[in-house]
Structure formats: structure tokens, C-alpha cells
Length: 128
Image (cartoon, rainbow, N blue to C red):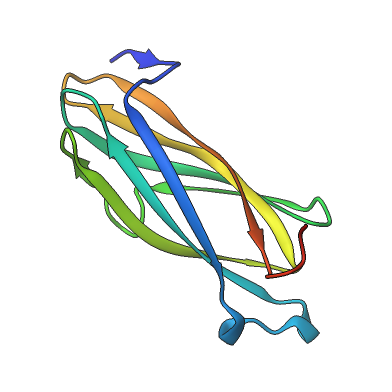
């Protein structure tokens, strides 16, 4: 297996939402949902093997999360397909950032990291 350092053809999109009903600001609990879209623009299927997240809160506290697949799955994403999933994060500050990568496996045995660009988790009206 070879590892590709600059993958082409995997586009990752993110949308976030503050979950007020699950949050408790008085006790420094801020809950966020994020929905990820992984678009396979390659000519062959790819499988999401694992994830690596770097979560940083407004106090510069960093938490790293590594694990197999996402939500207990290792989805196979066909060419032209977009795989979506929603998960969450809990911070002790009103905003923070997440970034990371997915380890992917192509049909020909190539493994590569698909970077997840940094995105903001923010309680509404806290960031200008």
C-alpha cells in the first residue's frame, strides 16, 4: 500500500449548529452539532477507514480524538457520491474550532489522508 500525501478528488464540507436545548451556559457546557459531507470526485470508490479530530476551545485547551470510521461505520463512497453524517462536540467555552483528517482507502489499495479544514463552533452572536 502506498500513502498519498496530497489527495485529489475528495471534497469535505461542514455545517454547524449550536444546540441551545442541550447546552447549559451557567455550567460552562456548550453543545454543537456538525454535519459533514464527503464528496468522492475520484474515478473509483473510496472507504473511510478512520478519523482524527483536533478540537480547540477558546481557552486553547486541545482535545484529540482518533477512532475507527465515523458513527460506527466505515462507509464505502462511490464515485460521484456524497456521504453525509451528523455528530457533535461539547465545549466548556462559547466557541472553538475543529479540524482534522480522515484516513481513506481507495479500491486499488492506496491509503491517503483527506484533510478536514478548520471550522468554527460558535454560540450565536459571540463571534463578529
